[in-house]
Length: 497
Image (cartoon, rainbow, N blue to C red):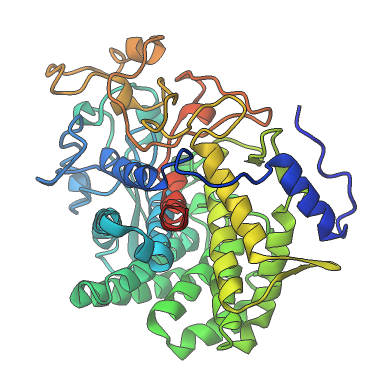
């Protein structure tokens, strides 16, 4: 049973937080025998090649995959081939794909200098996402936000190469708005434009101009895509949190990418209206509040934007809300010290929140500051060590000695909830495997025949227990938005430890 770390009053001195931090995961001297972060970084990026949809390039390294979904968009008269399958199914969901692309870009922007030879593959991973997002936004006033019917897809267990389920393309437009998914798409394109600014200036300009167009559409025609497309996107990627945060998030990335005064003014004008300070202990594909505040705070800490001071205060509050001992009631820690939030796929919270901890620790450190939490303060090193412990836990430093990254370490999940990984590859079994014919592989107790290297699964429950079983999808399914923030974390730790 998890240790009760919420018995202290919310304004308890940070000294107690530090005590709990060391109680949950005492610091040990770093040695070469501990985690190989560079190897884990390599694997975490390789994972994205196994999630590719469309025609695979000649330099494809994940050989058990083949071309798939080559006619996506054809029934709507558009080319929507490419992009990523978000998890263990064969649907292309635009909302998490855009967030994945944003976080891969942010990983490169902040930590690309630490990636060494893996940087070129991280950049390719971003481009695989942005090439698709450019196709999905090619028509003004329209954003294609999903390809594939999730209900028919989830009724089958088949390889993406064999798909015979509906590949309907779903869109938002002026009459059916979706400011959430459009705002996130604008953020992804803007963030990626920074990645390509010096590497491919022409492509960078295209990404930025498209980001501006998509953001304008998102802001002018406000509404949630889960209202416009409720029967399609819910309960899979229903926007529970509302679209307001994505508008601020998109504006924040456009401000960073373009330096245009209009986005600064938009942020300041809409800070209260779009609830910048809400739900500060959340960050993921559905809730961008903490990310907005951390991203904008960098300028404040650099002494360049005093007018954004309230965002820094929000960011400080976010940091304090997840520290052990004084954390918000919605944030728990397992007995082994893993951040745990209710709901499925907990590792998405672990990697996203840890990314913000690490990014903010760097911003605060460069400004020679600390984070005020009531009467005490948290040092950048404290935040860094908390983020590092989460990464070490994922890589096997946990009560059951299980690495939750497939292929890393001596013991890792063997039966992940992933169609392509669990079914024999086309090379091993060239004949078509139909919708229901794959069920025998889903129910098999045998390990997956294709090792999906780098895939990080949903992870253990709050007691650190993990069922290595396909039907337990909340624990055993990998997703692109678990891995995307982890890329930045591993890059940093590979360079510094």
